[in-house]
Structure formats: structure tokens, C-alpha cells
Image (cartoon, rainbow, N blue to C red; front, side, top):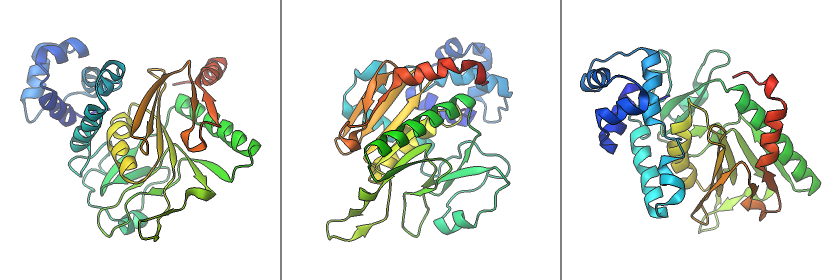
Length: 295
């Protein structure tokens, strides 16, 4: 969920009117004017939740502007702009009193962190991001995908293993502020080794990653992590949005972005499409066990 300060930044950047925010959120225009015009606003959580509806990034993916009507260049620019709002150590996503003033963290700092039992965080460009507990729908999707991909890899005798969070993936390897993320699902293969132009072996990063969008991590997954994944040498990145019944598939090597519905069969590019995921079957699975999923 976006904070009021985050929404103020987006409002300014997108030149949103108070009338538009009021109409989309259901919050009275007088309250919107008061909240966005004051530096000391402290709205209730229920009001913040309503206001988020006006800034919902996932609503048919406004970054793609009505299913890819914009050019690829504009999409990349938008990702970079969003990253400048949410990343680069400017603000903290999620967080609590424990995490509220942490930034500039190195990998050594990350390894030395002492967190309460059950608490998970990611560090992106030295900024701490709180990881909220996943929903049951999130975990049902993740379990299905892990089991399916594992079985398909075994059938083909591919020397690859799918891993699910928590699994640390380090993306920055300098001495400065670090990036350590915990993707929902990744595939690690024996052929993932990389070398630079001089033939020097590079640190391992996965070639394939899936993130399942949640309200608490949507902005981070769609913009901050997308930019970091692109820069880090990851080949293929899927974002699954169960709310919109859509999958966004990036192939950073091909510089391509594709949008699929839940009626699609989607091939995994790093396997040349030899392994495909039938999203209709995933939807059927969720519907079959809907009475057990309590979100």
C-alpha cells in the first residue's frame, strides 16, 4: 500500500487533480484537498486504503497504457521514472519503527542484521524494504508453479532447480550500498554461469524470476525490482497479477514485454518455449480449492 507521501509524489508527477483523486477513491474533495495540501497530515489507515484506489498502479496496468498502446521506449522511461520515485534510497517502502530509518546498507550490514523471528526484508540500493506476509492466494499460486515447473524440469532431465522464497539473491557486488532480494520463484541451472568481455567469471544471478504481485509489494515489484533485474543480467522476469488475471513477461535480452491473460499458454523463453505454463489450468486449480483459500 502506498503511503501519503508516495501518493503526493505521484500526484505531482502525473499532475493529478484533487477532483480526479476524489472521484477514483471515494474520499470527499475537501478531505483530499486538506490531506494533500498539508505537510502534517496524519490520515487514518482506512482513508489511506481508499486513497490508494486513485493511485492503483495495477488497474489494467496503466504503465502499459491500455494494453500496450504506447511504445516500448515510453514503457522503459515510465519504469525508470517510477524507480526514481520509489527507489534510490529516497523513501522506505513498508517498514515499521524497527525499519523506519534504515538506509545505505552494504552486504555486510545485511548479513549482520538481527531481525525478529519471522521478519523478512529485502535491500535495494541500500534501502530496507519490509516484506509483508503473503496471502493464501499468493502461496497457492506459488506452490502450484513450483510443483509444475519442478515436474517439467525432471521430465526433461534438465539440470535445473526451481527455488521459492525465502532465497537470497544478491544483485550488487560492489563495496557500497547493496541489493539483496528474495524473489517469489527462481530457476537455477547448471548453465547459468556468466563471463564478462574479458572472459572473467561473473557472480551468479538467476536467468528466470517470477514475482506474484501483492498489494504490499506491487509498486516495488513493478518498478524498483524490474529496473534492478534488467540491470543485473537476469534474462526473463514474469509478474503475475491474480487481481487483474494477467501476466507481464519481460525478456531483457530481447528487450521485449508481453502481456497475457489467464486464458493463455505461456512459454518460458530460457527453455526456448519447451516448457509452457497453462494459466487456464492454474485458474482452474484456484477455483477448485477456493473454499480452502481465505484471504
